[in-house]
Length: 266
Image (cartoon, rainbow, N blue to C red; front, side, top):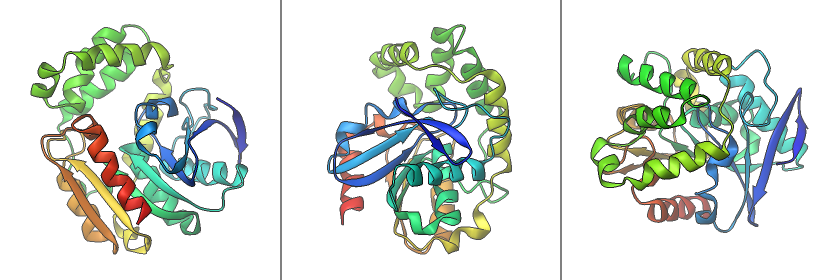
């Protein structure tokens, strides 16, 4: 992936496809290449995906506030000569996408917020053991990826989905072999940035059309958070996916992304 100077930081990025620009923002601890399975389903767009600070081959500074990562995304668009784009962020990437729309409204045409939250006291928080399992898995990824994935899968998928789809573990192991894990200190500092995030009071400032996508069985970012977001954003609609967990697109990848593409193209 090429490296570009985006504001004060060097970011690793790549593009896929042709058409109107669509900026893809990945979630906690994962690099941009994690978008790879989804890219062919986003036809009609030039997808721009990148490694958030601290992940993949992007620079690893000392601070990981959501606002800083939103400014990184805006600076990446500037560096690529893209005045504005539609934006699709998942999980922490959805927090970054909210902040991007709030801090740089002219750069965001439409917004897709996947499995994300406003943060702050208005958000429905996960169980402490769910967060503990996520952190354990993330920090084990570099030394014992199989154990890490065994811990992670029930966090991001319903248990019956994992039991019915043993291939998911094999695919995750293949992905782990390709994707460089974030260092433990980056995981800790990024979690601090997530804990400080709170968009609730500012969300009515978002004037572009917004699609909120969430799995109804998500235990990491509970589905109630989708309704909190909708209640605060003027032009928002919710696409709730039955039986889906945090990795909502696993339930019906093609159908879900057809719905997202329809929203982005209308």
